[in-house]
Image (cartoon, rainbow, N blue to C red; front, side, top):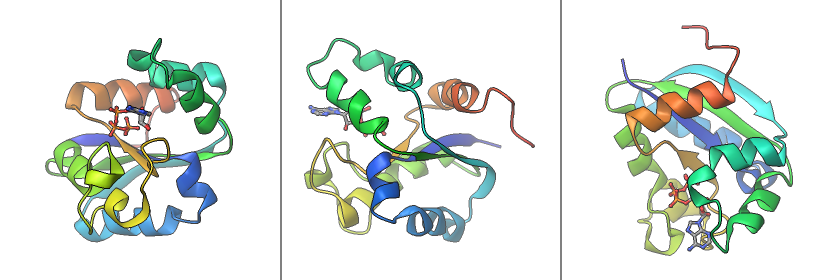
Length: 137
Ligand code: ATP
């Protein structure tokens, strides 16, 4: 059964969107496997976004993602990775269709509300990074 790593980012938590986002994944039929509220360190966020290291927006991304807690989650179900991404919308919120998380709640590419793994391989990596203690099932 496919698993994906979904994270309500600092802006999503600050804006009170945790319940809305969890509700979307529950109603779609995915199963919640793990969940925790984390105030991450810069080193941890740097590891999560290591492919972006060296880009002009990297320092701002680290600052933003450590400005408050995030909600780290693992969701399981058919096509969890691809469907999870579809539910998020596009990387650029302006290009995201209404009905998606970003299409409903975001405008700015620096404040995109929620993260979802972009491949099965990255999902397993991200789950290990955020849940080193392991997940229940
Ligand atoms: P995420 O990985 O956060 O779910 P994504 O997979 O849709 O987002 P990526 O292309 O992986 O998008 O970008 C990772 C992060 O880097 C995003 O959080 C986004 O805010 C930031 N980012 C990407 N491109 C830009 C850009 N051109 N300017 C500013 N920030 C950017």
